[in-house]
Length: 421
Ligand SMILES: Nc1ncnc2c1ncn2[C@@H]1O[C@H](COP(=O)(O)OP(=O)(O)OP(=O)(O)O)[C@@H](O)[C@H]1O
Ligand SMILES: [Mg+2]
Image 1: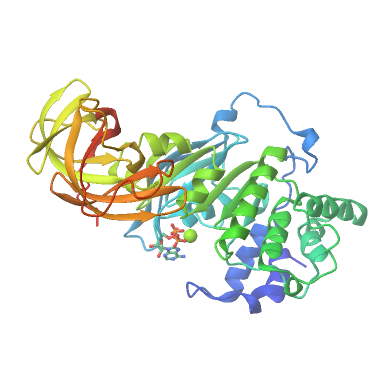
Image 2 (image 1 turned 180 degrees about the vertical axis):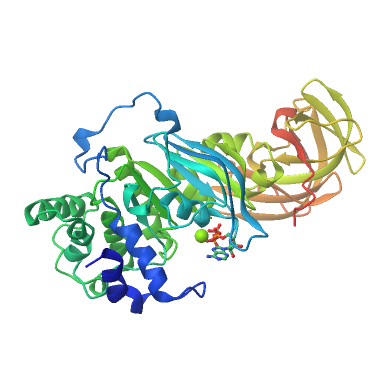
């Protein structure tokens, strides 16, 4: 029986309908994505960590999006001229708000949606005419469940069975996949007899069982509670490291993106705002949107009054702030200063900072390992300062007048971002 027909029969009834697509059509696409057989020339990773492959030429551009756009209705582009290169073995995360086009990018990479224009290449080969089952991709979805009426073992064996692997080989691979996600001994249970976290481990094992080179995960931990998420974040990271698979991961949780990824692409309205390792995104955002999206930061609107090399003078409500020029700007331009709360000192030694201002403490919150102090400075309320809890609480009190300071390098001049809420 053709795989998609089999899936129609098996799973169409159990798919919730999120987008009004007929259930059988969705079931077929789902089947395409989980069956995903090993390509004819299988260079996939083995589930045995010791056989991890070493990098080869061309690996820096293992997955390439070349000016890829997508429109579902022929009018609005939900992905816009996207250029992206992913190295072999990399853990890349697409991070962005709801509706920014993250799932659409994964679906196009998996071959479950077609780009309206542009080309996607894997290992140098255009995927334009390559169906999902020939792409050698494993996929984990947030919403698509396991087959509820099959045991864990049968769920895992399903992609292999459709592919025609012999029973011994199937059993061996299923066993290795279960070991990998630490679920040995549970293969005779049905999904309904597992916890949410265990079910998601099975879904991960199923994506890995046919030893793909490339694994896509779309919000795989979205439905889990915080502790379970943390545990599985660690597990996915470990699996990635052990197997050396290339991972494209989607989340809208910036913390998850930061702890898991080699690089994070911050996506907004179908385009990448910035792509960089997590530390760079945090320390050196080069767009207001990124600064706002990654970690907490203070944003002071101002106007440039002078530019000296990399340093700008910025007028913030009548106060002059020296700041690092990150975006091109000229005198008179409206800009946004981004200042991380942990980079601001309270009561610094006089003259230590070029930027020193009087502030009024509006609110102090004790959060265990640090204090969150909200002040009004340069006429701007809600300016946050984080102080590590080494001085004890009581060091700063509501209503205090304090001096605060920060360096020009820690105040970054970014675009004014007219679209910001
Ligand atoms: N099959 C479809 N038909 C029509 N429009 C679609 C379809 N799939 C997605 N869209 C639209 O495309 C845009 C991007 O959707 P997409 O699912 O890629 O976003 P996302 O970044 O994954 O969001 P989320 O974080 O909510 O999952 C949205 O406006 C969405 O409504
Ligand atoms: Mg999505």
